Image (cartoon, rainbow, N blue to C red; front, top):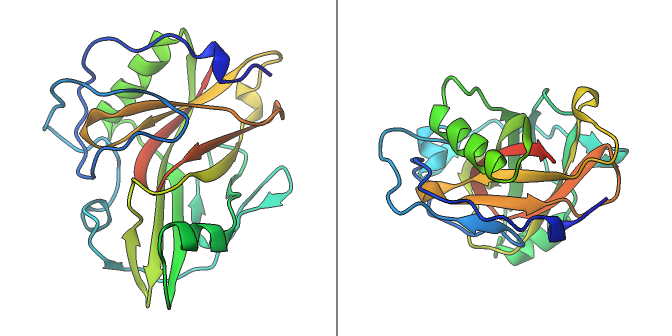
Length: 220
């Protein structure tokens, strides 16, 4: 499978996106920031409390997910049914150390399907990014990488070290000899194209950072 070397074309023009988290350049990504991000609405479908970075009370449900037989390392809520499994593959202790978690603080994640009707600007930004690469858009997810502290949930900062995620590509989006990547829409209209770092044609594995974002699988 071809890697990031095929991702050469940069996006042009402003992508109108509004988020409430801080902007971030994802690890290993091709990134373009609009000159004047819109302030109309949130582009990532998250709760007000978690998106603002404030703690909220969440029932800690130690659910797990897996991709291609590999189980996630982080407890959380894995509800993304539009893909064939989701998992965080970076070690739990590695994440905790990298983000300075101490005491009772534990990494905690949330995966769900993104509803384009509720997040039209995020979807528009994803579509524009895919079009700039001549790519087709597949499943779109809300992903939050946060932490749980004594029953209180909050987001991890978006400027931390890389966290590796794996997502199972649904069968109806798998195409032989295709190249896959992930478009990530973050705060302030930052749109990143994250390359696939594995060779499994049925999965896409990519590096990102903490915080919330809208993530879409794209196919070339």
